Image (cartoon, rainbow, N blue to C red; front, side):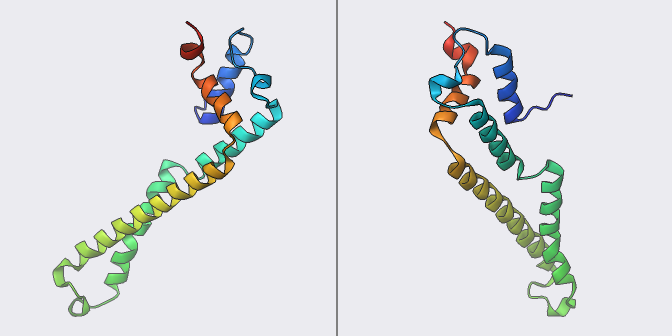
Length: 136
């Protein structure tokens, strides 16, 4: 089984093409192999922090159900929207789920921005573009 995440795509490409004459070399970008490995590890950890698709669906489902459970604690005559309470509760749950997802995305973007090192990022983009960009 091949793992196809960002870190593994980069390392596979480096291993496949590193002996080519026109392949981007680390010393041209003033970075070391250790710096690159640490950076890739940290970046992949941030990208993975959102969790698997299954865990994302689980969290979203829980966020959607919480308002419904809270509304079920009250009698029907105590609910403010009458027979529409269930639909309002599900809508509130959807908004909560979207809010949690947006906050996670924002957190990832902020952490990636703090991690960003322009010399390493330019090297990584050149590695990803290698066969198309560097060969005529």
